[in-house]
Amino acid sequence: MLNAPVSERRTGLFYYIRTDVMKSSPLLMLLFATFAGTLGAQVTTGQGAAPGVPGAVTVSGKVINEGTQAPVPYSTVRLEPIGRDRFTERNGTFSYFSIPPGEYRLQVRMLGYIPIDSAITVEPNVPLSVTIMMTRIPTSLGEVQVTAPPRLCIFPNEAGFVDDPELATVLDEARKNAQREQLLRRTYPFEYRLAQSHETYDPASSRSSRQYDTVTFRSDDSWRYRRGRVVSEDHSRLFGEIRLMRLPTVADLADKTFLTSHCFKYSGIVDEDGRPAHRLDFLSDSTLKAPDVEGSIFLDSATYLIRRAQFRLTRGESLKPAILGLQVTTTYREILPNVALFDEIRSVQPVATPSSRPGGLREFREVQKLLGYRFLYGGPPGTEGHKWIAATAMSAGSESGRGNGVSQGKYGPPP
Image 1 (cartoon, rainbow, N blue to C red):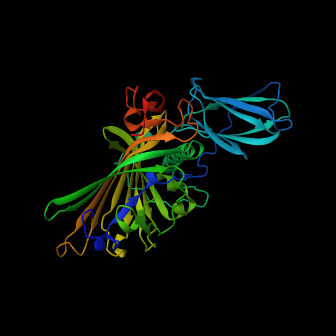
Image 2: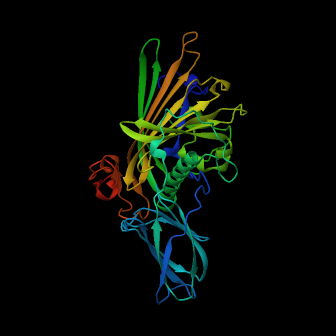
């Protein structure tokens, strides 16, 4: 809408798109436990106590591949019931300090591995060291092709279970992606800058107007999906009074409300920019009359790392003015081994407006590109806090363009 009259801008004709890059996606808890997780902890004890709490000690450990004995870096570790999520170090190690005596559960997750949920006992004044052995997921997903027979779209039950082993596997891997981004956002909060391009395009005349903007967001916004409530009123310094469309993303698949409002279908292995990827489709509840979303998620077939997410607005015809065919696509890049962050978001909104010719449409196009980010406090293992990291440096030092850009990239002033 960019050069439209102010009166037109204030009637809600322009729908400003906000997705996962602009909110702290309380990320994806998708399925609560599709895989029960085998217990794989080897325990040794030592002497000494951590200061601060009577009898408290340090609980440390190392996560390794059961077959190769190689460390599994950047696994996610959680000590229940106290929480304290974190990534393991590059050598697979982790530590919890000043842990009081008692019974705990150590939860370890990694993309492509069976989850671990191990019971441990902390004795007074006796430090605890554990070795967690993780096993690759044994599946035949690599043999599933798009030519397979059509599958039903399944609603997960309240516990997240779906009666389709292959679908359950892909859903659980999507959940792990969400948990990893959730950990990144919450344990290592950061701010980031986006370059935004807003374009109004008239297909009939092939004319367009474009406006640019650069904005900064934090990772700890608390917006969450609400069934049939993806459109709301808001104010934009660029456009004034607008209708804000905050479309759910991969992160919201964790939410129980989102799960029970959508059915899911595994659509096999597809080509994603020349590389095979698992495709997961989801549809909104057909009984829902208000606007909501449907879409697809694409996970790398070898690593299960998220590569792309696509969301489409449903029942946009119920809005005034109507939105027909809105689609938002988010691509991701790997900033640490098997840790992904959004890279670019593209959206297209065909909208019928009073200023259009009879029966005509205008398209509102947005491109939101990540320029850079910085951790507000301490960053994940191998990174530095407080320093801006340029998006162009994220993939530095990686032959495949994957991983490790945060630690090897160059730091500089805000992009």
